[in-house]
Image 1 (cartoon, rainbow, N blue to C red):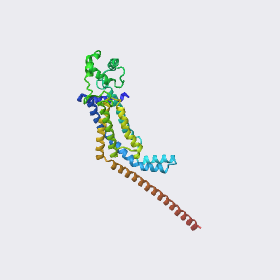
Image 2: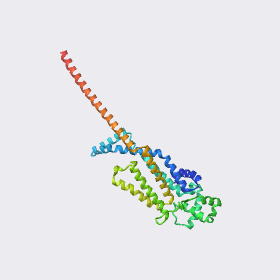
Image 3: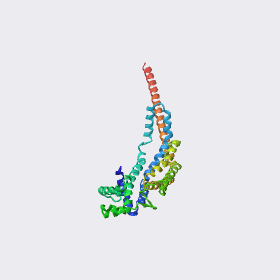
Image 4: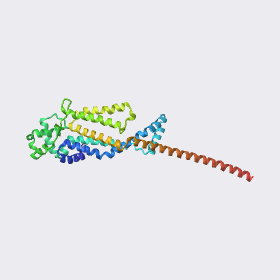
Length: 320
C-alpha cells in the first residue's frame, strides 16, 4: 500500500518546505486535508440523518414481513428506490480516511523517500550502514531512526557523500523537545502523545453523540461499548508506533471536533432528520393517493360495466 503515500508525500513536502519541521508539516497538512474533505463530511452528516429518519420505516417493513424473506427483500428494495437510497453512498466517506491513514503511515515512516526523494540505491546503502550497528530495529521505523543516527554520527555515513549526509541531517524531527521518530512507552514523557490521542478520541465520540452527528446503531449498549473501547485499543497501538502517528491522530481529532461543532450550528442534524421524515411521509401520502385513485378507477370501470350490461339487457328487451 506504499503507493497511497506518494500523493500525500508531495503535499506534505510543499508544507515542509515552508515550515522546515516534519511534525508541523504533518499537523498543517492534516488541518488542510480536513478542510478539503469538509464537503464530504457534510454529505456524510446528511446521509446519517436520512438513515436515522428511515430506520423506523425499515424496522416496520422488517417486522411486517419477518417470516417472508422474499417479500421483505422486495419491500426494502422498493423503499430504497422510492426514497433514492444508495446503500454504497456512505462507503467513500468511511473508506477515504482509512486510505489517508495508511498513506500517512507511509509518509511518516519514510521521510527519505517523501521529503528528500533519495534514490532507492542511496536509501538501501544508508539502511545497510545503519543495520550494521542496530540490527534489531523495526524495519518500519528504520528511516526515522536512521535520521537520528546520521545526526549523531555523520562520519559513519560519509560513503553516501557529503551532500546526502547534510540533506538527511537537515530533516527536523523535533517537536516540543521530542523526536517524532521515537516510539513512546508508558514510563517515558513521550507517552503524553498517545494519552492525548486517547483523550481527544474520547472527546470526538462524546461531541459526535451530543450533536447526533454519528450513527449509534439504535443507541445500543453494545455499540457504545465498542465505540468507547476503540480509543483504548488505539492507545496501546500508539505505544508501538512513532510519536508522529500520535501527532497526526491528535491533530485530526481536534479538527474533527471543531468541524462537528461548527456543522451542528450551520448544518443542524435534527433539522436534516425532520426534512427526511417529511420526505418519507410525502412519498407515502402520494403513494396512498395513487392507490386510492387506482381503486376509484377500478370502481368506476365496474360501474361502467354494470351500466353497459343494463343497457344491453334493455336493448335486447326493446328489440323483442
